[in-house]
Length: 162
Image (tube, rainbow, N blue to C red; front, side, top):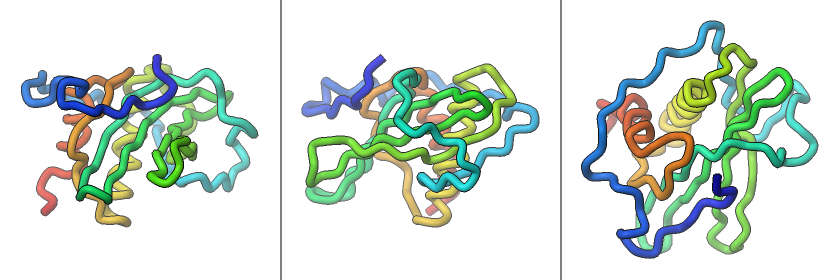
């Protein structure tokens, strides 16, 4: 899988988004208690260095204006006792991507897709409430999570919000 989100320069480089399968999200794993942390390691569980073995989930983009946007790539890592959701944000002033752990949860399921979906739900619900984040504008790239998964997560987080 790709380690760096690809930034689409033309509409043809984006995954198909207008017509996609409508999927149901898997149920939340038993004893799943996600923590949205944005890099704050209160328990001391984060690895000292960014892990080399991560599962690329995909990337989404918000384009509010010509000079105001956000592109974020998402990666999942299974540590010894916790799943870690890494965010890879593009700083518009620097061509390098910055990494931060956005959320984590104790390992209660071995299903990567199920855990990834529910960590993304926790992260985006928190951002929608605390930062008034709106629905992403498009999926830049799919990985473990397909376009239909991203759209289903978006529907759950932002359905009924202005």
